[in-house]
Image (tube, rainbow, N blue to C red):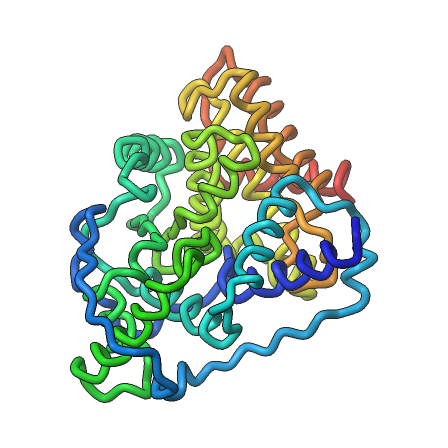
Length: 366
C-alpha cells in the first residue's frame, strides 16, 4: 500500500472512530428527542445566506486526530471494505469545503440525534429495507426471547440536509444556541455549505454508524449499508447481518453480570474483541439456523465475506473488533454450530451460545 493511501486510510480510521462507535457500552441519561421523522421524502426547504464566519463555536466536545506511526505497520492487510472507506475519505478530504471541525460537528450531532430520537423510522436511504427490518425484528425477538424491548433507528445522510431535522439536532444538542431561532440561523449557514459541496453530507461517511445501547436501542446507518454493498455484499445480507450482530449485544447487556465479562477481560481492548467476535458468532448462528433467517450456504458465504472485511488491524485500540481472520473464524464457527443442529431444529439459549463461543474462543482464536 502506498504511503499516501495509507495516510488517507489512517485518517479514515480515526474519522471513523468519531462516528462508527459501533458497540461501546454507554449508558443513556439524556432526554430523548421525540420529533417524528415520518417519511423518506425529506423536506429540503432552504434559505441561502452568503457564507460567513459567524457559525460560532461548534459543539463543546472537541475531537483531536493524531496519526500514529505504528498504524502504518498494522498486523494485517487492509480489506476491500477498508479500501472502500479509504475512497470515501479521500474524496471527502479533497473537497474544497472540507473542514475537520465541521465534519466532527456533523458526526457528533448525527450520532446524538439517532441515539435519542423516538418516532417513525425508515431503513435505507429510501426505505428499501423497511419490510426486511420488520421481518428480522420479529424473527430475532422470537429466536432469543430477550427480556427487554428493542427498537431500531435508521441513520440517513439526508437528515443533515433537511432544514427541520438539522435544526432539531442543533437545538437539542448544540449548547452554543439558546433557542430555535438561533438554531435555524446556524442551520441555514450549514445548509449553504452543503449546497456548494458534492460530498457534505452526501458522502456515506455521514451515516456510517452501527451501534447499540443498553436501553434496547439499535442504530443502522445508510452509509454503512452502502459501504458493504460497494464491497459486493447484497443489501439484504448486509442489513440482516448488522441487525443480528447488534441484537446479540443486547443479550450481552442483559447477561453481562452473570457472564462476568468485566472480570474475565479487565483490559478494554480484549473485552471489546471478545464481545464483537461473540456477536459475529451468534449472528451467524441465527442467520443460518432453520428457525432463524434460514440462510443457505451461498448466502452464509457472503456473511463470511462481510465478517472478514469489517475486521480491523488495530489490536491495541479499545474499539478493536478482531482481525479479519478472527472475525471470519468466529462467523464460520457460529454457522457450523447451527448446521450441526439443523435436523433437530432446537435453539440454543443465549447462555448456551455464550458457553459454546467460550470454547471456540479458547480453542481457535486465542
